[in-house]
Image 1 (tube, rainbow, N blue to C red):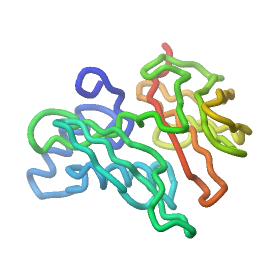
Image 2 (cartoon, one colour; image 1 turned 90 degrees about the vertical axis):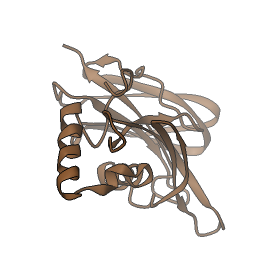
Image 3 (tube, rainbow, N blue to C red; image 1 turned 135 degrees about the vertical axis):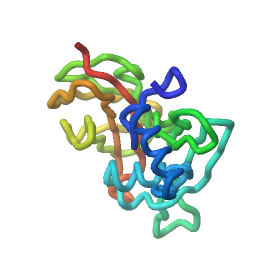
Image 4 (cartoon, rainbow, N blue to C red; image 1 turned 90 degrees about the horizontal axis):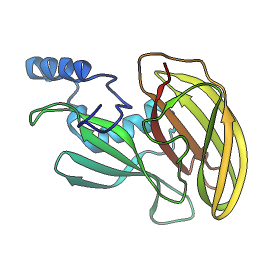
Length: 202
């Protein structure tokens, strides 16, 4: 758990991994991006999730050991970047050089509320939430270090309308799993996404 409450989604699977990076960084300065919540949020979005078009931190709000990074992209017809998600990060471990860890996303016009955050799950898994939009197409992924299962694509739309689907996945015991819901296809391949963290039921 991160800060006693949150699921460690990325980049570190355990506190020991975060502490190992701290020691290495103090020794030779490696991986300085772990100290920047915006760079960490973008690396999570682009490199881990593979959402390459989401390439900028539109806004970063820091409150103590928490940060919320609004990640987004620029649509051709608009002068301002569009926000795809608000990524929540928490410093993992102790000290001023504790690295930032992605622990989830805040609710926007696409929510992911089933399963509950931190729940113990089995395969197949029901995933759901609410969405506001027109002609949405929701993709569900279950991820560990890579994609363990995927369901695409669920038609959805309306004003704060419920959506749900089932996805089968290959279990990955001993680590937190990231559930990802994404939609797009109007002005970008992925225009909005939400994530939550769960564990494997024993």
